[in-house]
Length: 84
Image 1 (tube, one colour):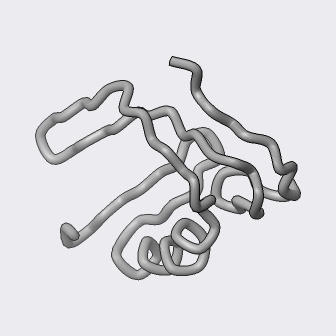
Image 2: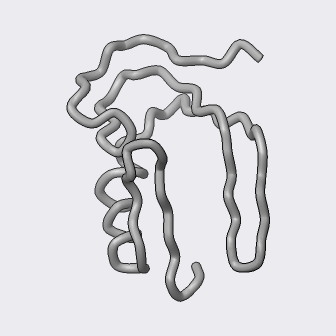
């Protein structure tokens, strides 16, 4: 990890800035609150001086609360899958 990491999950602005905040976000929200059947489909990658931006389709079954992406929405049990 770089000295001053930054992660922003758009559009709800979750993630963190700096190692301490980002570690807390990953430890308490991102890792334990990500469905087990998650599949990421890459769409694009933009690389610039000192920056990397990945865009992807996030597919999963909504069987747990995903507070970092769908705050205050209880699990629906629905599959959210891409049909690409």
